[in-house]
Image 1 (tube, helix red, strand yellow):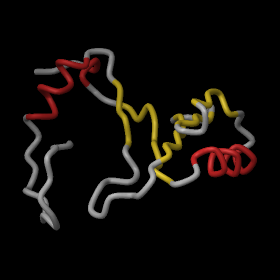
Image 2 (tube, one colour):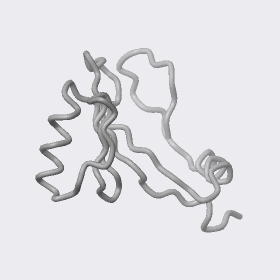
Image 3 (cartoon, rainbow, N blue to C red):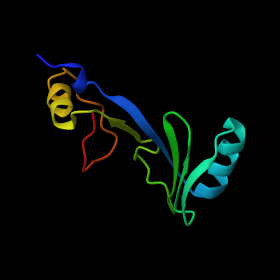
Length: 102
């Protein structure tokens, strides 16, 4: 029904934190991977596979996903259609949410 172009792979793991630059420097040293982008300390990326991103947030929101994982696919629209067909159970809701994620 779907071909290999609809499969997804992790492209970036983003960590919400209060000091993106400091955390990125730590993980850069720990992994030996260089920092490849630094958006004035608000968002910092490390050249790992998948890419590690650190995003400054003033106050992490309770119940919010603090470790978003971005996926990529050669055919994004077909991948979204394929993912929508995968049966899932309704997650336990801890607080009202205004977004959905696969």
